[in-house]
Image: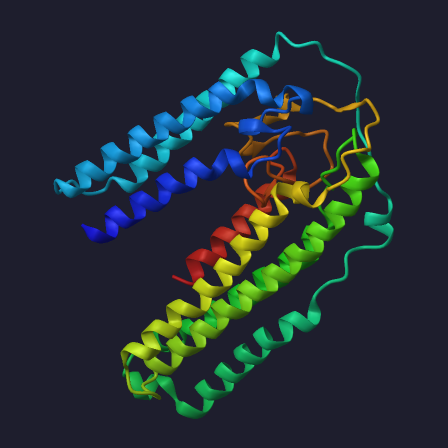
Amino acid sequence: MITQVGWLVLVTAGFLLLPATARPTLPFGIRVPRERAGELRSIRVAYRMVVVVFGVAATAAALAGVTGLLPVLVVACLLAHWAAAGFVARAKRSWPTGRQGVTTDTSLRTDLVRLPWPYLVPAVAFVAGTVVLGLVADPVQRTGSTFWNAAWPVTNQVVVLVLAVFAVVTIPRARPELDAARPESSARAYRAYLTGMVRIVALVATAVIAALAVKALLLWRLVTPGTAWTVLTIALPAAAFAVALIWLVRAGDAGHRLNRDDSEDTGVVQRDDDQHWHLGGLVYVNRTDPALLVHQRVGSRWTLNLGHPASWLTLVALLVVVLLTN
């Protein structure tokens, strides 16, 4: 019961903070002019009130002994977010369109953000060390189980490392998120954001891989099980995720808080492409867009362009990886 209540509180808090993490021009995943963003305060307040009601109701039900409430709460809050996006879109229809445009920075292609290979060296070292330790220790004999049951920490380490390498290679090549109203300052901010993101990916991957190395020591009975080792398997990734969260809050979605130049204004608003975004900015489908990865409108992360044929091959490959590691 206590574990479920804790997760319910965390999910509620996360959805309450979600509007604050979005760019000012993308409330609930709907693109609006910067000068109009302040007019949507009532929608944000109503959304937060609904999320609080859902969270309190779910927590009360959990304390009364009801189980399986976490997915229900997540779906309910997602529906609230989607409904808020609908209200923003409805308000937007009454506003004048203004002059729209797009901007690009070719240097983000010709001079890519430097990949953090030195940051991944510790992760590679942890994987290699765990493999060598496994070859020497003979975990199958020590645990009395099958090879795959004894080797799962190593296979998971490899998967995390491969995903980290994939992320740091593809993220700088994804379509840039620039502001037509502030082309130069948004390009500088986005480059700084990309630099921070690839380093954060390397940091989190290293922490998770190190925690899996400790798991291997415990599973293979090379160390005596104890509270300290168990805490270490949790503390390592938790600390990395905490650092990542602090940096993401400081940088803002797509690095919009790193753009401190309020003097730049071209008088052009970013081109409206809401028709390609669905479920409140969570899903992107555009068959005419050659980009495979695009920055999601909700939360600082990238998502696949489901209109691109390669996106479905990527999803299938990820599904195969998940099934092989379970």
